[in-house]
Picture (cartoon, rainbow, N blue to C red):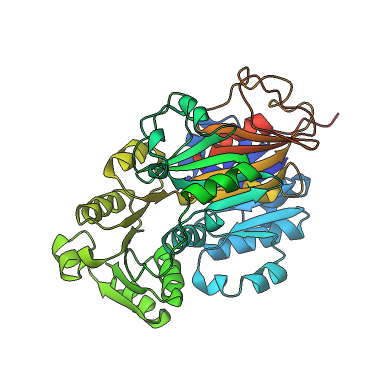
Length: 451
């Protein structure tokens, strides 16, 4: 596809890199010349230093020859206008980032009137995943997901104590014809290899035939609990904090938000019912103590600063809070996050890029996708002849770290693959990938060029 991305910030770059992984032709547009030069020195793409709201700029790049435009600059109104102009000039599909609650409340009207095909909202996406984790306690519906005979089951490894301390390659003796596809450990999703060792407290995601997984579920599963979550403290009253507080409050949870900006506190107080909004610095231990942090069932750090969120998560963990969630955008902090022992971390940039890719591919190779803990994704795709993933054994493929081939549908047969398995044309393939590895996965499943 030929794609124009407007906005060279963190989200724009995440989307651009993901699209390049799928062998798309990308043009990046931003009016910041220094930023564009930095990108041009690192990536082999066409860059344009210009204001994309200008019609003459759109005409100069011949926007009608593109398949898609994605606008992710810093203001909703700019994204809406840019997408509307591009569509009017003949671009077949447009995607806008829209974050404001005022716009979200009338999003269907905006899409219809402004002729926008898809809206991405990283703040709402993060809030929804955090809500799902806190309230449902399972990241998959009822802890189990089934698609055409293949099931994915989530449970604590402690339910089968013999697995603790075992390498993944040794688990087949206990989990016959099943595969440990992912591990959730200290808030981090791990896609394991054969030498990865299971530890006490790990949550594991096991993939296998539906009948075998259902038998295993009877042995290991707990009923999901809703009523245990009563008190949640949220650090940061930005858009993610707002959306999450509203969802939790509507569910019946007592919510406290700590926000440092007084004007923002007044905004939150006016718009949120049954939510206690506190004006203060969430990094102040005295304030946290006064507000009974230690009595909370969950603590969520969603300020605008990764470092603050990590510090706050550490403070909450020291108070033995059961569920601690942090929003972290920098991938370089991954190792640090694991050591802090938080229960869940979420990266809005990766989530947003993945949502856009799945929208693009909805009528193509992707059949379904299912997020787990906002960090990884199960995807089922159609394999086509000429894809890099086909006609070689899995052991011969250059499968990137963070990606695993979980199952294959072939005619009426379901295969839990080994290193000797070959993916064939028209197979339906279930793949697990970390969201941070999506650009690398896209290179594996890119569609062959039409002749």
